[in-house]
Image (cartoon, rainbow, N blue to C red; front, side, top):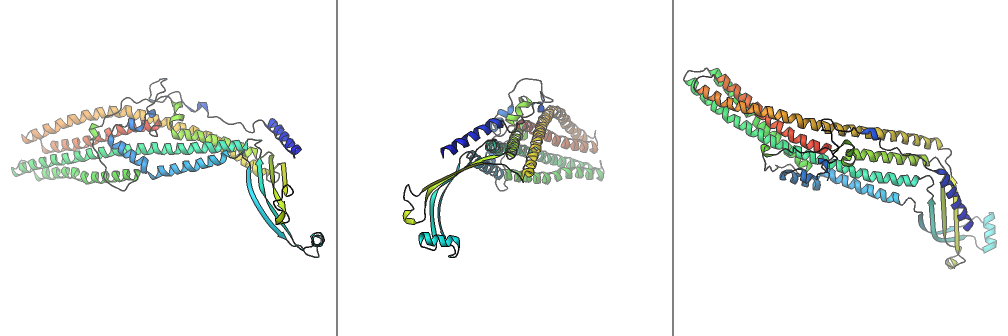
Length: 471
């Protein structure tokens, strides 16, 4: 027994020594990142707004309340949590790969050979009976030496899978945080537009009333009344449309927060929400640690590396050692007689795949191609992430200019409304000028509310694209 163990250890040492490393891992490509984001000032500052917890990034209590509810009740987030637990079990299972498999066995058998057979005649002569019973109890062990690092790669793959499941949940949370906040800002915009439509409707009522007085006085024709009422109906039509969109947006927020459709509390107006003008972007290479989808792509490469190692190890001989020991007897009365009933066996050997070698090599070649795909997927995830950051930066910059010009236009049109009404009452302007001014102010104020929403959303998009929202 000692000689056998010594020889097995010697074989294990020699094969391990000559094996070196079965497969060389491919690292994340260093040239996958640009030096800086487009539309960002050139800087070596690595700080990023993505490092802020979402409760510190958002100052609106209504948004914080919605996100809290979503994190606690969102069904997709809960599914992601279950996936993490499943991955954790798989990781625990993989960590036991180097531990020998042990099993307890108790066997009882009875064999009655033919009395005319060789075994039957010998049995009758030896024991003076026509059947034989056998009783065994013991422990069996089985262990595979990790010569080619197959078990180690299985552990690496399971660990990467576990980490990847955590990154999937983080990515989902960043998406939910972003979608909820954008939905809330959309509600504020719809509230503002609804108020604008109602205000414009009252303005049109006042104008129509004056035109009717002038019609009774013979100063205008019926065409003036018809055009004024048509303009009034434009504002009136907007009201149910906006109310419909408000209800639909509230329902969408309810789904994200894991609740049935209901109205959502708004303690702020769109104009009272302040823009964050001090957002920092850091450097592109930091996206790996901050952005869950990029980190997940990096972990997918780690998994692919492990799979290559596993499939290549399958091409080489496997050293397996099995052993069993316990008590054995032909009679129950002598079953537990020690040491006479003791037995032990140990078997070790190398197994090399032969007929299925081509199948295993095909699996190895596929694993190498999957690894190459993982590298390309990583590059693509970085491209998308950098592009999204650059998009958000240019939106923030250009929307600020658009908001300035549109705000000035609204101021001018508001003054034009006052002037046109005053001139119309004194007969120095016709009704078409009044109606045109009302149509322009309605459209411009609606656009201004939309631009303010777009600015808020651009800030959120920059925060999300940098990897913020999961902390």
